Length: 235
Image (cartoon, rainbow, N blue to C red; front, side, top):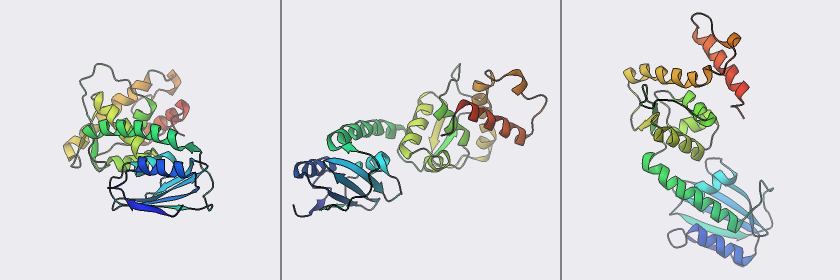
């Protein structure tokens, strides 16, 4: 099989994957667009390695590459394949990523751009605030200037995981996104929401863990850090 190449406007990636599967060839699919460049490595009709221009790898890179609608591609048959990071059959990869793309389509209705900044709502109308560990981790990193991309870096979550978590906070009435950094008055109100999130776990502390008197910011930071470690919030 000679090198298969063309434009993504003529052949969608799912179609390209089927060509590669039918060929039963090992090789490397190189994809390049204005937004991103990447590679997908195939061995024995499975995807064994993927990376994109943002240095993401594995299924995160696959997800990013699957979103591309324009650009060029080239599949080069080769036995020079990167060491396997995972082993994902082509059909399974397609089904899994199609599901994620459908989820992403829903998320982008509320979060059309990952460069948007995130703001916690100081006084949410919900009666009781209950959040998951991923929501807590993201909420704890929100400030007046961080975009979703910034939050992805500071939390260590993928951009998809970050967007999914922020979307869940939006649906629960705890956060919103903006194309402008939060102004000073809004930033001053943000700690109110942080205190509410902190209170979710306050009830679960032992009496000797609770602060006595007024805490300094350093003491509060250390107390929250201890609690997060105890809850297993860090990977």
